[in-house]
Image 1: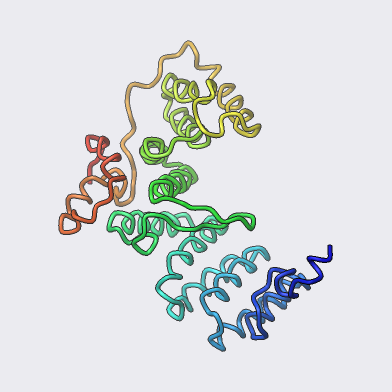
Image 2: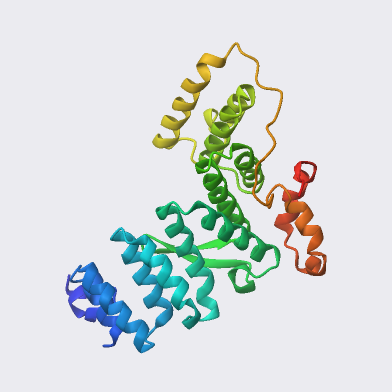
Length: 287
């Protein structure tokens, strides 16, 4: 207890040190817990050029929490040019979450594809093999491999929301090759059910049922698997569809990923090993 008393005020309340517009905004956000006032102060920090990278990102997060996600999108688009090069990737991640919140799926998909291009070109993580991420106040390392799988998972989810299950299937299969987990397996199974490919859908769930994938024992995963099995039950004696509906990808980006790689030949020397793991899907790709 005495140790906490001896610590500076900003350390106790997890605030940046000093007395500037940004510091005052963080105080109002975290200590006074007044989001609307914090938004006003974050704007003042941005206009004053005070820690603009953090001010813009933090303001966007608070706007999202206040169900003002569309405003947050416009703020980032309008003022990101004031931020450093190092902050752009982080701002993109915030934008992806905002697009998801707003239901702006086409913009979300385009930005996710842009991030995949950056990984291919070796530009992700500012050229480093790992980056430090933060979740619930804890820092941890994320590899390019994990980031690629995460982006593909988000892309698969976005295609599912659009009802484009064929494209979502292709994306989830790629993601599972790189960093398999139970959640993506359930989503893949769902995509196969929607295409009347019931035997394949059940087969995908087998690895989850056997506990072979990360997250298989989580309660929400077990519940999801049971829901999918219930969907499959009426179709046990009915053969799966033998035909695969042609993907309706607007620009065939992911189904044409290998072709895009061939177009990026000048960058071949910077190609990351992770894309070699995706290459077995070349026979499915058609730009």
